[in-house]
Image (cartoon, chains in turn green, cyan):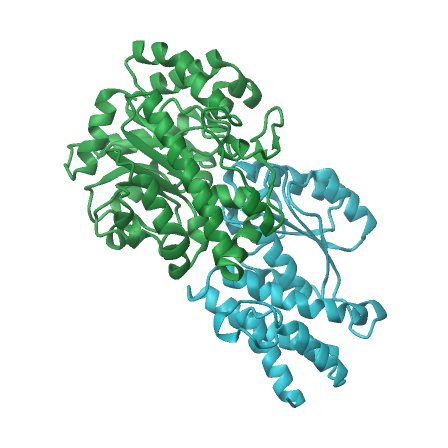
Length: 342
Length: 222
């Protein structure tokens, strides 16, 4: 991310109204390797391919802010790997993690990982270290520490159904698990901050929030997210593309100031729920429109989205969720054309 | 407790997710018996399995409606499904003996690359509670796994689930391969990233955003 991109983000978050609403996308695997024309396994294992793919996307769409920018990751395996889960990496498919917690005793015995040495985390950091000079020479810097959120990691470690029923049947055990994960996540983000002093933001991804009711969210979500975001970066960015009506009114209380949502809610409604205190990154339907429609229709649907907006402050136009697989250059350009015509 | 009260309690316990005496959920029913014990007593009292099954469905309908209105959430829905599952364990012998007639076979699984099981489990439990024989293939299912089970169960219905946008492509491939080999098989799809349009586009026969819709779709073929 360039300093100019970072400044734009901060300006928008601070409520400044720009002549033009910026466009931004969360880009990661599998969209990026597919778009760049390499297999996912090559993207994950080859530092040069990873760097070149990121640079190509940045250069091709120079009007756009890519978030978090030079994202070193191994998909859903990244943090769960540190806990010792089995990770499956099909050659050209998204990797996945297998659950490790089968009984409540496993929660008691779960060892808090050391992010410096455990799982894929050292590899993730080392990729950034190896490429740091190249990234900076290209006029960019590493601005975000990144992780999945505590609920998301809990559901990977024990299975989503099991975790979501545990919060009702054994809330103490669920809290113990979340405390262990949160403590680990704080260390993990601190390590990223220490390793790259250019980092000034935290980006977390957690769609399990969307499955909880208000009381459950207040007990099992809010305090843990707050603790992690309390590391106090300038930008506190959350992605949750599952339902967000329950959690949205609490985002400000957690400290979040940038939010990427799904597309099942309108930006106007979300602005009301967050009292326009949070910058919204969204929310053209990612798969049904951005990936599947013709460039002409992407342009028209983006125009339509823009025309519905009651308030254009604290807004970055994007899709609802991360960039989905299969989005073509033409469709991204059609989206940007519509945004640039505002 | 008379028979009418037993049935009403089964409805309530399914709707509230009260599985058994030991179950600590919901808090206000701690120390009370749940669907496990109630079903046992109901069967001992010679209440017909069909009536018990209907009570399950009535309970699931209540929680389903609360879920639809945003008054209940996935954890509560999962607990209701568990409560219904406790009933089904007692009713299984009646399905096997033919006392209660199965409506058909429903093969369900989460598609390749997707380990999310909430949607699949909910649909699976609710469909089973509605009198269908469910064959649950689990998560991360290759197309071949579906194909092989379809071969073993001619005339079955198939359900595919996905939560991740990234695994939608795999769902697409699985639907197309099943349709290529078994054009007569009805495929129902569901999951967060899906819409009816997307379901039609990939060649599926039905789409449901919730377990109740899945049951309605399947029942429409009976």
